[in-house]
Length: 331
Ligand code: SF4
Image 1: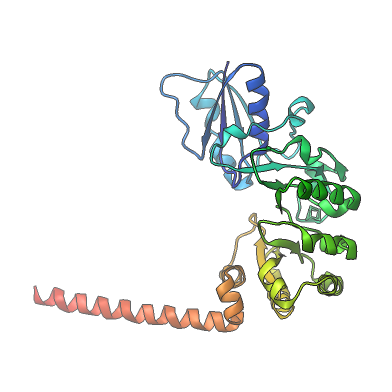
Image 2: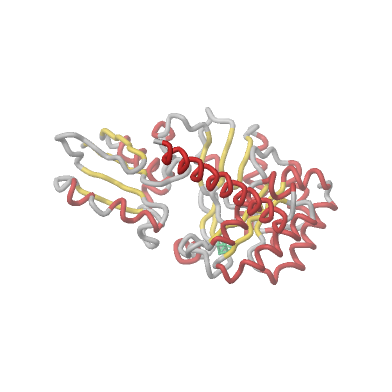
């Protein structure tokens, strides 16, 4: 059988497609992959197409598949398309086919699924349910790779499992990254002492999503300091996602970013992509998410500079239009 996989919009190698590939390779099928919107097979059609949509806004990309490939069996999944759909256990528990993305050199997987919280803006409680251990990293890592990316949604929900998984990576000299960050509310002194020693290949990410968590955020940053994080280390290595749901949360977003800056931590504003970003939300994202802006000035100053540059550009444009008018008068 010929199986074609379509990765419409993943920003990292698509784990589900890598597992589907492993499953079909084991059956002796031919597996091909295309990334992005361009899908074309000439006059032939695969026997089966699996397509993945990660972001809801991209659902339209998959709409024409049934019409374009009427002879292929089509199976569409991904959290942007269907939150309820999961891989069957015999595929979910397979080691990913890392050859599907030949440029990738990072092992990717979940050591746990689900979460113990129910944040109103998050799809994880609906999609994955309660927190539970799933696969030890030894079951899904690629021994040829020196880096590993954990996709766990709330890896600190089970302290013992987190220590076990990270110790295993350390023993095997594998550099780690935790894609969803750490739930700082669950971080105690033991975990902070472990985190400071981990070989991490990217920034350490936490989140300050709810304004009412200010007291606990401050206490936990103090724990990071107690185990040895200096101002410089916080500045270099620590970032907080700052969730902003709509324009109504603009002031709260500015406040959280400013307070994090005073605490020597980076901020990264995450906006609800299902809501329309207003101009001032985009300004906030631009200021907070670009480190040279964030550390170089306050958001007010950033906006003043930006308005000044825009007015200069406007004046230049007017001057140019005026000159063009004069040229037109001559000819
Ligand atoms: S803690 Fe994180 S993963 Fe859990 S529900 Fe909240 S946002 Fe989602």
